[in-house]
Image 1 (cartoon, rainbow, N blue to C red):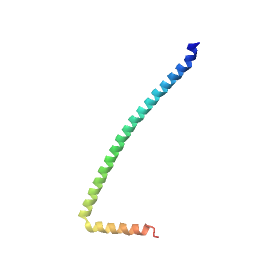
Image 2 (cartoon, helix red, strand yellow):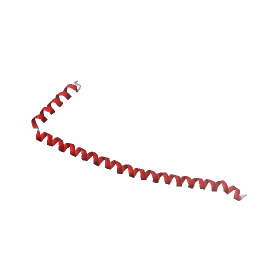
Image 3 (cartoon, one colour):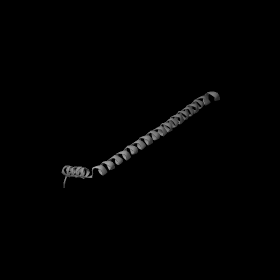
Image 4 (cartoon, helix red, strand yellow):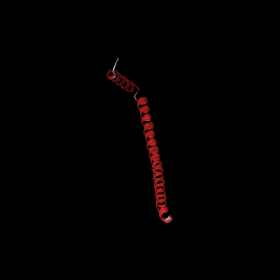
Length: 88
C-alpha cells in the first residue's frame, strides 16, 4: 500500500523536474537569441553612424565648394518651412 501512495508523488516530482528542465532550455534559448539581436543591433547602429558621418562629410564638401548656392538653398528651405509651419 505504501508504494501505491508514493506513486503519484513520484510522478508529480518527475513532472516538476521536466518542467524545470524545459524552463531552463527556454531561458537559455532566449538568452542566446537576445545576444544575437544585440549583435545585429550594434552592427546596424555602426552602419547608420558610418552613413551619417559620410553624409556630413559630403554636405561639408558641398557647402565649401558652393557657398552661395548653399546659402540660397538654406534660405529657400527656411522660407518653405516658415510657410508650412502653423502659426498661433
